Image (tube, rainbow, N blue to C red; front, side, top):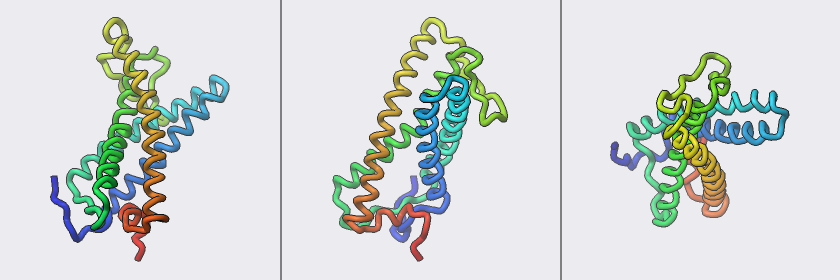
Amino acid sequence: MPMHDQSVTRYSTVAIVLHWAIALLLILNIALYWISDSLPEEQGRALMDWHKSTGMLILILSLFRLGWRWLHPVPPYPAGLPQLQKLVAKAVHVGFYVIMIGMPLTGWVMMSGAPPYAQIIFYGLFEWPRLPFVDGAQGAAADFWEAVGGSHELLAWLAYGLIALHVAGALYHQYIARDAIMARMSPRSGK
């Protein structure tokens, strides 16, 4: 993993674009789920198709983002940032990677074990492949499939908590601490 470059004060443009794109997609996906649940079955199913496709897109972008982060230096925390805030920030980042990768994976497992009509058609373009080890979900695969469905829901609740904590932290740094934390990931360079 690359060492911290003390001259880097902001994330790279690619990291910033991925951060905000994935954030918007996560919020969109949450909205798609909650709205689909309140609609008549046919309309709700159409929104769930978008939910599934967006989940797979989040998975692809998150894996790319993780690789990008591995290969490119991240800016160090500003001098004087309390150790507890650094630990919380790191825990939230790890939690978000668990969400951004774990939720789509568990959703993929759920769809792979569901009846054939529940396939994922990626934004209406092509059928997303099913995972063969749960396709048809019988016996031990059915037990696994059931457990994954429960973990998908738990990850959703973790996502809500992490989003709230992340937004609260960003607002704290921007308006109370008035430090340089927000500028590191801001779409504008501030120049």
